[in-house]
Image (tube, rainbow, N blue to C red):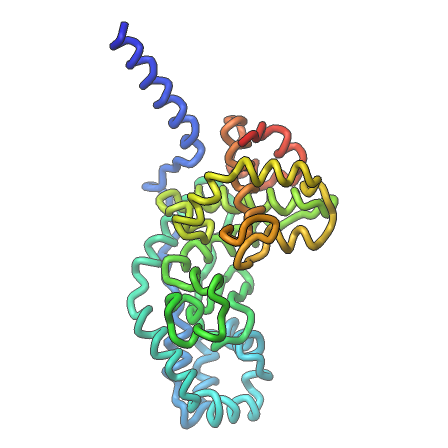
Length: 337
């Protein structure tokens, strides 16, 4: 009887965890998506002839006809690359700037080899082809924004990411210019998950229904769930952008968060301040202890979606991604931490 009991218990455990992970499994050995090769615009831009920028830009435009105009205008916030004034600014002020030189040197040193990033992205987009068959695989570009916005640029089916935002939390140029709570995620380990997150958010954009907090909580929770599907080997704290200690802290207090939201009737509130306080990056979530991380609403949203997928085994990741009925997701999640 003792051996039978143990066998039954083990069978239940295997069945439980098998059901939990089944929807995240994907056979990718036969999936062909072409080579994922990051376009190193950052390298090519820095290598141009800095004594004849105007001519060099013409040559660079032949290599990057789509991206160069966008980069000049959006990342560097200058006029059209063909303007004589643009070349003059680059030649006299941008390239000679010692801070920019230091920034580029660090980027090109830390990211001299990106084969590991390309390999992870290739596997993620192979899995994307399995779960979202009609999706196009994006072209990935690296660029240096030198502190200007935006951090990432989407154009066509392409994603360009500012690699100078991933030089490590202790990079000296970040100190004094970037808040401590933001610096933690400015590291190489976040590049892949950030690129895939940008792709998911573009592929499955937020559809606002009633401007309620729960809608955006669950949308962001969906994106994190789908991110975990495409990057199944990545640690959940990395996906969430928390330290391991912060993730443990939240899991230990998950029921407290939920009870607070229910008691204060925050879930279905349309107050914009709640979205900011629950979902935006911050040193802590102001409704809770100073020891809390920011974005606790996103954390809870992810747990609700996990519960929804666990309790609705017939739902595929694609069906989840396309479902904008957030009240239905909440109700059918049976979430009860």
